[in-house]
Amino acid sequence: MNSRERFLETMQFGKPDHVPYFEEGIRKEVLKAWRKQGLAAQADLAGMFSTDEREEIDLDVYPHPWPKRWPTTKAELAAFARRLNPDERSRLPDNWKKRVPGWKQREHVLMMRIHQGFFLTMGVRGWQRFYELMKLIHNDPGFVRAMMQIQAEFVAALTERLLKDVEIDAAVFSEPIGANHGPLISPEMFVDFVLSSYRPVLDVLHRHHVNIIILRTYANARLLVPVLMENGFDCLWACEVNTASMDYRSLREEFGGGLRLIGGIDLDVLREGRAAILREVEEKVPPLLAQGGYVPLADGRVREDIPLENYIYYRQLLEKVTSF
Image (cartoon, rainbow, N blue to C red; front, top):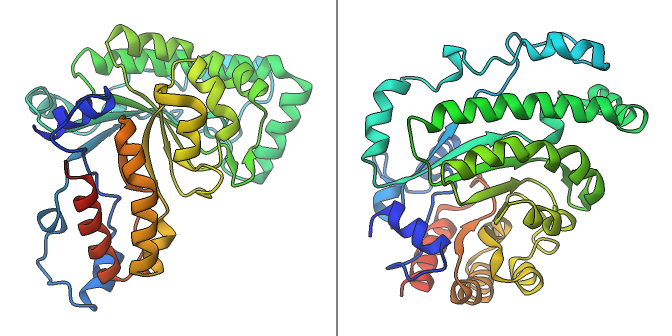
């Protein structure tokens, strides 16, 4: 099987030759630190371990030009909407026409980052806009719904434009919506303001037969999982979270096989040594693999404070545990 076939078979709860393994992301500063620990200058980590290639297309869903001040009233929305033109040539990824033929012949996994989530979509980049948005939710919920809807229709049109040219394997919605204690808005508010606005985008994805809809969250989104599953999301990718509150074994026990999973291995154990790594992998990975629909992966980017020998041991152990 190639990487694409392996991923799709896994996500369909089928029988791949083995589950795919995606690289967590190794930054240059990590490689620099590891070279001081003995990693050869020309070493290829992808060649040292069994790694499945994965690529993500990142949609440009930002307003052009960037607003000096984000809207706070419905009267300002028409002018804001003009900043969201899905037909702008600059919205396409670099070298789009040249890359499309290769994507059509690919053997690797191709995902598309579709939506940046509630807070970023509403212009939250700091505490001032966050406070402003919280007041708007309370004082003018109709404005919040209208602004989310405008951006959803824009994202849907842009997604339609791109999917006419290329077939993707999964769509990724990002949702940095809370912290380790839980989401910053309730499930009811999430349905009202967020999931309702996703409908035009999800309709486009379903029309183009994109059947794997991923929520990639950077917080404890457990309270949101039931409403997510009710609204078309069938895969969770939890990153950099408190793994006790987002434990994948517990999630599977509660929500069953309808929830596909990517990640779930606590990155912190890679700092602790072999015993901790062995315990984490052996306790979590085999039962989830037995249930299917699971891609094991550490829950965040590898940092330079993780020793090279720990990372090598982790990758070798994961290959051993996941081989059928």
